[in-house]
Amino acid sequence: MAFVTRQFVRSVSSSSTASASAKKIIIKHVTVIGGGLMGAGIAQVAAATGHTVMLVDQTEDILAKSRKGIEESLRKVAKKKFAENPKAGDEFVEKTLNSISTSTDAASVVHSTDLVVEAIVENLKVKNELFKRLDKFASEHTIFASNTSSLHITDIANATTRQDRFAGLHFFNPVPMMKLVEVIKTPMTSQKTVESLIDFSKALGKHPVSCKDTPGFIVNRLLVPYLMEAIRLHERGDASKEDIDTAMKLGAGYPMGPFELLDYVGLDTTKFITDGRNWNSLSSVSCNYEL
Ligand SMILES: NC(=O)c1ccc[n+]([C@@H]2O[C@H](COP(=O)([O-])OP(=O)(O)OC[C@H]3O[C@@H](n4cnc5c(N)ncnc54)[C@H](O)[C@@H]3O)[C@@H](O)[C@H]2O)c1
Image (tube, protein in one colour):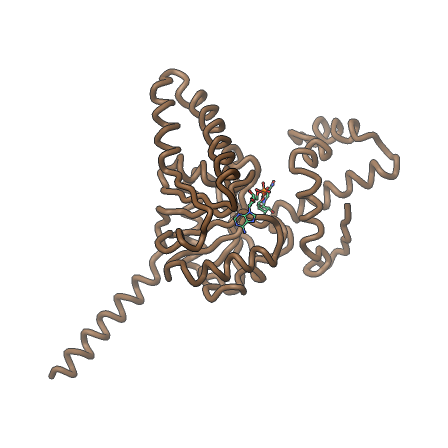
């Protein structure tokens, strides 16, 4: 009888564990690694939408700079959002800043976080080292995501033992303004992880789209060849940079011309993106883009 009871308890508890594990994770606590341009933006938006945020970078000086940047950006948001009520604006800024803690030691702060979003330097080896280390310290349920623009998400996920809880979460610059988030699914990413990240993106007030782990995902796959073609057009002496920018704004209705956009994204970042993936590998169309 005791054996039957134990079996019953075991089967009830294992089926409840199975149904619990099928449930999406509601992301409340976010750890953002990298407090640069993108990481600071992600931390700001997450905190402003009611999440508890831990922001990690290499030094206290960088973190102080990130925090100052976040505060300035929040003040601009508050000025618009609470134009009629500056006191409410001040409270919004203070509450948001109070939701962000900082650390220089990622491994010591990921034990109970729901999501780690990595936005560090665009280098596979460095990203792999980081995730391999964090995999040992993070809780079992924690989802890992990379904000990489150009690296293969699968190659980053393979540094961990949680490939089913690993995805790409690609934000756009400037994060507080840009509505899009690309949620990138590798062949190993579970549906539960994708759905949890889609819900999280919506909770940030963003519009998520999903895409397979293909070079450039959606936006950069279409945008980078366009930018490179603009450079070639200019290099051939066919048109000036200014005229190309004007043509695309007035003729195609784009808010910025390709050269303005290249300056905005940064030539270094664009170079990393073009170098980071073999743009020929998954495409039937030959395109060898180089800056
Ligand atoms: N800049 C863009 O427009 C853009 C857009 C989308 C995605 N991305 C991607 O986001 C990531 C970050 O880009 P960014 O423009 O914010 O770079 P950034 O140089 O502004 O910031 C990177 C930050 O990461 C920190 N860092 C580096 N190694 C670290 C480590 N091991 N641990 C903790 N912190 C570390 C650096 O100190 C720096 O503050 C890259 O993968 C990039 O491809 C960039």
